[in-house]
Image (cartoon, rainbow, N blue to C red; front, side):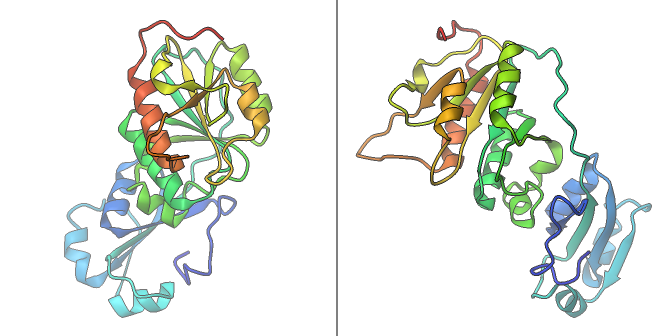
Length: 254
C-alpha cells in the first residue's frame, strides 16, 4: 500500500488509508482503528520500539528505500497503513441537549476539511455527516492538516441531504445552515436549547438554496471593512464554537 503514494490513491473504496509522520502514526496506534502495517526508517527503529506495540506489523527499511518505494523524498521516519472504519448509517438515538453535529456538503479542499475536523475534535464534536462531493476525510493531506484528529471522529455518508435534513427535523433536531442569505440570522442572535446540527457548504458556492430552505435557520457571521465572505473552515470554527458553548438559552422560533 505504500508504493508510489502520489499516483496511488487509496480512496474510501479501497478500505485503507495512509498516515504519515510519527505524530499521525502514534495517534493512529492509540486510536480504536485497526493498523495493517507500519513502515519505519531504520534510523528510527530504536525509538519506534519504545512506543509501537510488539504485536504491530513493522516493516523496517532505509531512508533511500522508503523514498524509492513511495515515489518522493520522505524524511518523517514513519508511515502506517490503516483499515478504514466501516461506514455506518446514522442510528436514530436519543441525543443529549448539548449534542452538536456537523453536516458537510461539497467541502472539496483537503486543507479545509482537515481544519474543520481538527476544530470539531477540539470542541468535542464527534459526529460528522458527509454529503455529496466532499473530499475523503482519510486522504493523506486531510489527515496531516487534521493532525490525526480524524481518527477519533465518527463519519456518516449521506448522498441525499434533503432527505437527511427531513429525517433530523422529524427527530426534533434543529439544523443551522451557514449562509449569506438575506433571510439568515446573525450568529450572535442564535441560541440553542437542544441537539443541533450545523450545515456547511462548498468553498466557492456555499450551500444550495434548497438546503438552506430545508434547514431550520440560516446563520451568518457579520463582517466588517467590506469583507464579503470567510473561508469555510474559519466560518466553521466561529459558528461551532458559538453553538457548542451556547446551550441553555431560549432558542429562536422557527
